[in-house]
Image (cartoon, rainbow, N blue to C red; front, top):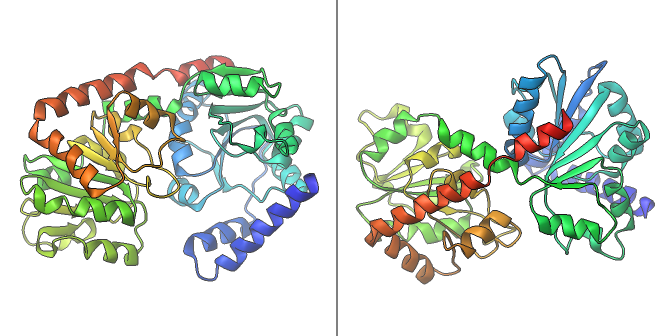
Length: 404
C-alpha cells in the first residue's frame, strides 16, 4: 500500500507539472516548492494548514500559542497557493513555507531543518511520511478541529495505510461526538471533543470587525444582500433577484477573481448600476448611487458581512459550500446550494431552520421573498443564528489547556 501511496504522490506532482503550463494556481504550487529557502531552526512550533480556510480555522490556536509563548519560533506551512500567497507574510509566523511534496526524503529533511517540538495540523491533511517522521522522532502531533465521516478512506477495507497514519497522531481534537465514535470503531481512542475553532475565529472577528468605509458609502442606509465566495451557478441565481428587489443593494464577492471570471459575472449584472471595487478610486462621484458592487480582490469577505442583511454562500452547486460561519457570526440568515452535507454547521443551520438550501430559482425567490417581506422574521432568525455561534465557541481554550 505504501508503494501505491508513493506512486499516487508522484502522479499528482506530474499532473500539477502539466497543469502549470496553463493554470496559474498550479504554476504557483510548483514554483513555490522549487524555491529552496528553508532556514535551519534549533527549535520550533510547526503549524500546517491545507489552505486559507484552514488557516483562518486554526488561527485562534495559533494566536493563543503566540501570546502564551512569545519566545517560540513558529513555522507555518501551506499545501495550497490560496493559503500561502495570501498569508506568506503573516506576523504570526517567523517562517512560512509551502509544504514540500510528501516523500520520505523531503519529510526527513524538512523536519530535521525546522526541528519542531510539536506539530499542529488543522482539520484536513494527512501525509504519511511527515506523520511517520514525527512519530519516529517522538515529536507530539496534534490534529485540531478534526471531523470524520464514514465515507472517508480511513474507514474503508482498503484504508489500512491511512489508518496507520492516524496511529501516528498524539491526540485528535474533533468537532463532534460522531467523529469520536467513528474513530473508536477503528481503535483510535486518543480523542477529545473540543468543537470547531472556527467558531472562536468568526466570533472574534464579528466582535471587532474591520471597518470598510467604501462599503458604508455604498450601503447608504439600504439593506444589502451579499453573495459570498460565489461560483458561476450561484451568480446566475443571485443576479435574477436584482430587478425583483430594487430597494435592496447587492454585493458579489466571487471565489475566483481572474479577469475572465469577473467579466463573465459583469455580463449578468445591470451595467449602469454596477461598480467594481477596483474602479472606485477612479470615480468622480461617490458610489452610493450604485445598486451592485463587485469585490474583485481577496481577503475582504469576512469584514463585508457586517454590512449585510442576508447572504448567499457559494459553492453548493459544486464540491461543497464555503464558509457559512463568517456570515452567521453577524447574524445573517443565509441561503446555499444543495451540496452542504459535509459541513456540520451547515447541517445544524438547516435543521434549526436558520439556513436554507435551495436548488432552483423558484426556491431561492420563495426564501428571499419571505425574508424581505417579513423583516421581523429575518430579525428573529438573525438573533438565533448569533446565539448558535456564541454557544459553540470555546474550542481554542480546551485545546490550549492540553497542548501548551
